Amino acid sequence: MKGQIVKISSDLYFVNYEDTVYPCKCRGIFRKEHITPVVGDYVLFSREKQLIEEVLPRKNSFERPKVSNIDQAFLVTSLKTPDFSLHLLDKFLVLMELNHVVPIICITKEDLVDSMELEEIKNILKYYEKIGYQVVFHTELSKIKELLKGKTSVFTGQTGAGKSTLLNTLNPAWNLETGEVSLALGRGKHTTRVVELFDFYGGKVMDTPGFSSLELTGYTPEEIRDAFPEFLNCACPFQDCSHTKEAECVVKKEVSANNILESRYLHYCSFIGVDKNEN
Ligand code: ZN
Image 1 (cartoon, rainbow, N blue to C red):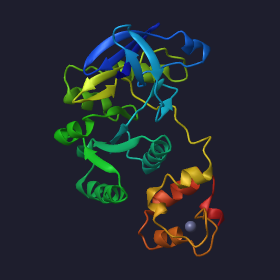
Image 2: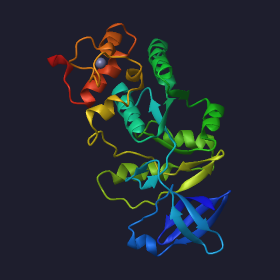
Image 3: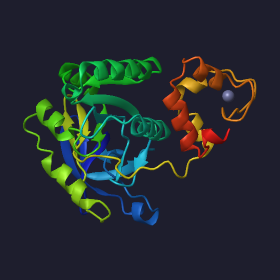
Image 4: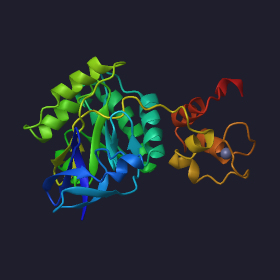
């Protein structure tokens, strides 16, 4: 039968199948074949033998924390303390696209900005919705619960943005305080915190703040370009247009016409290492 590893403790793998967790061992051949199951893996296992027989192909996998098959990531983004940053937001969205994780923008601390600033930010967020991203406010709990159903999710974001508060509001039995602390203390050190997936509103949620160490290095400019969904609809006359130096580039025209958010375009240029001031 097919289950999902929700926890690993020394050589025991806890496999969830229809809301029951079975502690399992791995087939001896795994070691020989260098197969190391991680939390999040979908596996074929025998309930009777309590044995994992096969690790199914992963749709994505991460090193820190060691986890796989993440469906979606809530980027908890505060409008103040820490300040709203479109650069961080765009970088995160690109990283999620590149790792096949659906990003969900979750806004917090909207009460800390004045109404004019809030209107401005809401207008910008409308653009993100237009290009296909889900945007929720932390107060929209029923919407968030609905999104969690049937998915393996991660809540991530800057320290202080309000991840723990949000998760504790969704489920007071949760206490993410420790996760937040260990992330802050663990920066630059090798923490051996165990990752675990918990049942959460009909889905699974990772118990540690995720993806703190992801970087854009190691991706080609073409991969980064294709992680901007609004560029894909632009029919540039040049095949494989980089949208930077090419004349007649449709993306650049759309930026000038304010149909593509200029900040997004400038972030794209900076992510691929092109200084727009030189052009
Ligand atoms: Zn172009």
